[in-house]
Every structure is written in structure tokens, then in C-alpha cells.
Length: 450
Image (cartoon, rainbow, N blue to C red; front, side, top):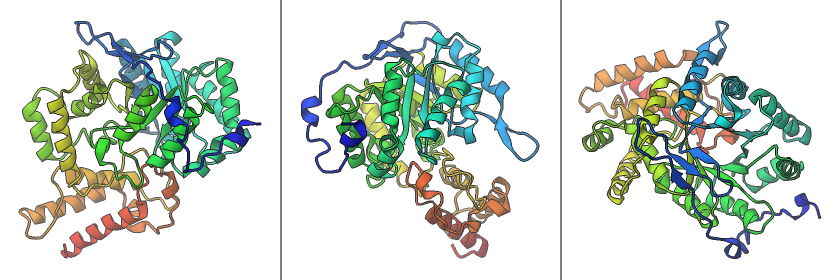
């Protein structure tokens, strides 16, 4: 019987054999914490002995520049500089995808990384066949990644964003087209060293995928999940599972974990002023972002925590955080839980600025609108009522900054609610509804009816 025939993932019974398959595999071992300037911390993969830097370089947010014809391209010179600095200071895990930055990320990563010895870094990339799931297109995407990244093997290869679209989407993208069979053969041939998946979705969808592992139908070498101190227990639970559940299920099975979105698309590096003040009172010499990274690194099953660094400043700060890494104690974890509870009280859009929703067919700058709105809220530049102190000042500041940040024709009022963006959002944000909410807010400010 072929794999595509016996992989049947229905919600009921997906974990029927799970308990028998769960083992007590060793956790990644922390190494490289000796005293010394900027001593990177590594976790040893218990499966194959890879010594992976606890901070990894996410290549979804490379620095961009205007090309001059209205097109934005990756600043390769800046990327080279950042990659050189990262490798020099011990970062050795680089995560990319054919889908990142409108298809530019892999090429930029390949150019920068190939200037270094291949044994100095681990490459992680993905089968991002969201559009055309045919075997021909999927296999071409796989082979193109070798060319773009200038390598003849992948250290960590992922099925990209499983969970979104449910079981049917997983079967369509990877089972019915024979791609699981193909990738397992590629792993046997040594062109894939570790095969895993990245996950966005509900708990029952995760259970179905882990059920494959439990029944021995697919062995997952690692898994990439969204984890941070807000989503640990405060994910909505309807569209996305709490990270604590995902972590514990993977930990039971001894599956190494790679973390994405430790900063929630940058929002946990730019928290509301009231929260930032409490963090700075405790750690005045450390960045706000360092709290989020230390949270992820505190959990021993975590092999690597990704950071999408766009410039040298966050790169240097992250290296500082993971040099002489200090896990959070129980009291500090409780403190972050209180901060997470406070964060949920702010009317933010749960956008991580991944840009999967782009390009919008109607030209709306979806992530730009959400980023401007969220930043205004967290930085206290958010008019809430006409009785509010400095209401006029806050109102005018929002409207002026909105026009400066987002061109008029790309603002929220031009959304026609076509829904094209909905299936692309890993956070399952009701994008048209949120755009309408922000547009109503803008109109109330303009008409003084807030």
C-alpha cells in the first residue's frame, strides 16, 4: 500500500496509538556557555549531535531598498555584512523559504552564506507550495532551492505552515501529489538531513499531524512552532493553539523544537509604555526584546529561536542576550505571564508582519496599516475618546502619521472585502474585518465622533 493511501488523517482517533509511541528522548543539551566575551550558547540536537546556536537568523525580514522603478529589492550588501557578523559571533542556523520577500530571500541567503565554509552554518528552508501543489511545481520548487541557496543538501527541511487549511490542505499539498514519498527518498539519499514541519493552527490539527509520527507513518525530526510569552497561554485557542500545548506534546515525544515569532512580529520588542516601564525597572541595562528571547531559551526542548533581524542593532543585541545566556527563573516567568495578561488588554491586531497576505490584488498595504495602528497603540499615540487628555493632539498625530506611512490609495478604506488574503494568513486574522475596524476608527477621528 502506498503512503498516500494509508495516511488518513481524520480528527477522531488521530492519537489513538499516541501513548504507546511516546518515549523519553533526551532534551537538547546546552553547550558553549564558558566565560568569555560574547560566548554564544548552543543546544546539541539529541538526534544527530548538531550543535545549533540558540539564536537563529530568520531570513524573512532582510533589509530592503528601493530599486528606483517602484520595486523594492533586498540590500545584498547589508545582508552580507549581517551574515558575516552573525557567523563571526557564533550564529550558525539560517532559516529561509522560497516564499519569503516575494521570492528574494533564498537567493540573498545563498549569496551571503556561500562566502563561508559550508560546515560553518546550517541551512533550513521549506516546501512553500501554497499556490501550485502539483508534483511538477512542488519538485521544481525543491530543486530551485538548491540552486538559490548554492548547496547540495539541506540541514533542516520543512513542510511549510501545516495546519492552515486543516487536514484537507495538508493532504493536497503533500500527500495526494506524492511529495511525502519524494521527500523521504531525498532524505534517504542524504540531500535532506532533517525533515520537519512548521505549524500554524488549532490543537486538533496539530494532534492529527503528530498522530502520523506516533503511528510511525512519518517520522518528524523536528518541528517549528510559534512560541512567545503571550501565545504561551493567551493564543485565541480558536484559530491558533496555545504554545504551551504544542511544546508539551513535542517534549513528550522528544522532538526538537525551533521557535518562530518569539517577538510576535516585533510587537514584543515594542511593548506598550506601561509594560516597558516595568521591564526596565527590573533590568535597566537589557532590551525589552531580551525578555522574549530569554523566555524561549528557558525551555530545554527548544533547539533554536529564530529572529528576523533587519539591521545590525537587533543582531548585536541578540548576540548579547545569548552570550552567557541566563534562563528565566520561576518568579520571572510569573512576571512575564502578568505582562502577557496586560498585553491582551490592548486593542491590537495579531499581525506578525510576515507579509504572506501580499500582494493585495487591490493594492492595500495590509501589513503596513496593521503595523502603523499597533505601533500607535503601544506607544500611547492612540486617541480613545474626546474626553481623553491631549485628545486633539493624539487625533491629529494619528491622522498625519497614517497619511505619511500609508499612501492614500493603499489605505484601509479601499478594501473591498474580497477575502483573497484570508487563506494566506498564518495567524487566521479576519483581515477585511480588521481593516474595516481601523477604517471606522480613522473616519471617527476625522469627523470627531469618537
